[in-house]
Length: 59
Image 1 (spheres, rainbow, N blue to C red):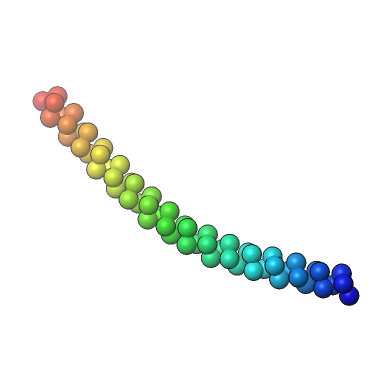
Image 2 (cartoon, one colour):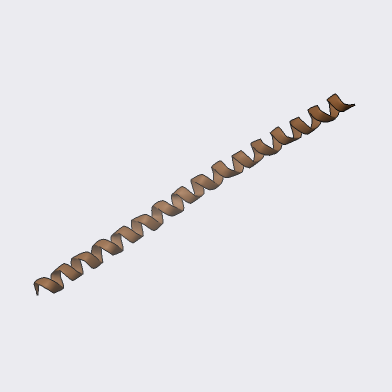
């Protein structure tokens, strides 16, 4: 009986942990995705500015 009780307790704990982990993971993923998009846009803008500057300086 004690063994079964410990087993159920571990199972519930793992289940709650996985659920919280998945929820946090999805939230962090959305946050990272937004940050990544902003970084990509910034990188594109910087790249365009560098290209324009190089072309302007070259010509």
